[in-house]
Amino acid sequence: MLSIENLTAGYNGSEALHQVSVRIEPGTIVSVVGANGAGKSTLVNAISRLVTTPSGKMTFEGRDIMALKPASVVELGIVQVPEGRKLFAPLTVMENLRLGFHRLAGRSGSDKVFKDRLDYVLGLFPKLKERADQRSGTMSGGEQQMLAVGRALMADPKLLMLDEPSLGLAPMVVDQIFDILKMLREDGLTILLVEQHAEEALKLADYGYIMAVGKVRAEGTGPALSKDPALHHSYLGKPGETAA
Amino acid sequence: MEKLSYLILSGVTNGSVYGLIGLSLSIIYGSSRVINFAQGDFVMLGALSAIMFVTTFNLPWFIAIPGVIGVVMLTALALNYGVYRPMVRRKAPPLTIMMGTLGASIMIYGIGLLVWGPDQKFVPALLSLKPLIVGPLITNPQQLAIIATFAAFLVLTWYILYRTRFGLSIRATGVDPKVALLMGIRSERIVLFSFLFSATVSGIAGVLVGPLLGGQIGMGLMLIVKGFLAAILGGLGSPFAAAAGGIAIGMMEALMAGYGTSLYAEPAIFMLILLVLFVRPYGLLGDYEAERR
Image 1 (tube, rainbow over the protein chains, first blue to last red):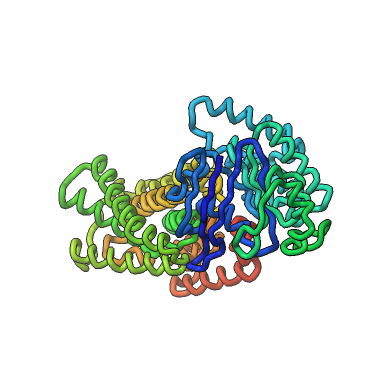
Image 2 (cartoon, rainbow over the protein chains, first blue to last red):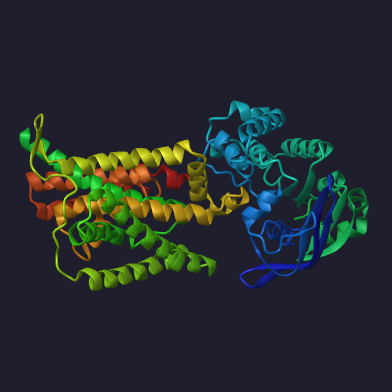
């Protein structure tokens, strides 16, 4: 579905990704893990076309996306849940969900599609229904993360990318979010999960990549990577610990 | 009582003009974080191109008004494509882009000077300037048109921002343009719309205020200063707060002139702004700006 080959990316002339290659097959969860500064968020932002990518190749469903603008990437169905939720804090929960639907709005029959998507998202996150008219910035961290995921799902994405969805959340809430991701995979959604909580993210993943200092250092099936003590020791800390 | 009602009417009229310019500045700032220093030039172009269409070319108002809107929109397009976008492409911060709009303002001033010359000109009035008695008030149709236009643009702005999908995209871009991109919103179109809409508001303000102030190159400078003060007082980033700030400044000016001396009007306005900013650093209604941080 998404193929990245030898991608270089960076900010203001400095490279944060060096020759990174990643493949994502349809209907799978792919986790990218690594310590802070490994280049995980840069990878997600490169796919969303928010950072410059001087060299490499990226194709989505066979189409070259290297020259696209961020809005065009969303139009193709690649939708990101950014790190730190990044809700439109002064806007209400419903307004945030409407903004998530922007990709599909304006098409014929979009009113019915909107209602269907809204029912789907509120079915996954019933709390959002109770808070529909509340300003999103006033909700708890866990509720905000649910809204961030719900907002992305309103776009009916083909590829959902989540950048550190567990950041700053209580373990119970993280478990809830990961359970939802499993459900979404069962519904056929393709997911790219970028996480510092390496063990949980790799256990959940069909395939995983371990990154360090802007490069992919190891790859393999999620469970295999999560059980490899040498990789843990080298890049992620001891097994059972979260990478710092 | 008669004096007070006259002063209030005068304050609301001037305040409406400041409010229209404050609203224009706020719309652009809200979508791009840029204070457009060329905003006053749209007011000037509105007044002077009204002279060109109505007096020079002897065209009726129903052709002249679309003509005026065309002139300010073309200028706004040139500003957007010639200054804003090239600077954004080069990743210029908002402060640098503001300097770009200042440069554009100086260029518009120079071109205007070549076309219309330095002298003050008579601007034909869209409506009659003859006194009109409405209950206890003595006014004139042009004055009422200014207030009505201000009210109409407030309602239109509210409708666009709060009742349309496009308006929701404008508000989202104002809160966080980068995340708006992740929703698939084309922020450059939002900013282009804000330039065109705010140019239209300011251009029409120029047509309406021209007959009262006279049309002259540089007339926009005084008005943009007042409009900017209105936006700061009300709360930069919210068009309605800027409009409220405009009315507050207009009223302050009129009451100072009526019961004291107009010499103290401007120091009193600055005093009011300082006091408000001490208590509410984001302006009278400035929650909008504070919340996004």
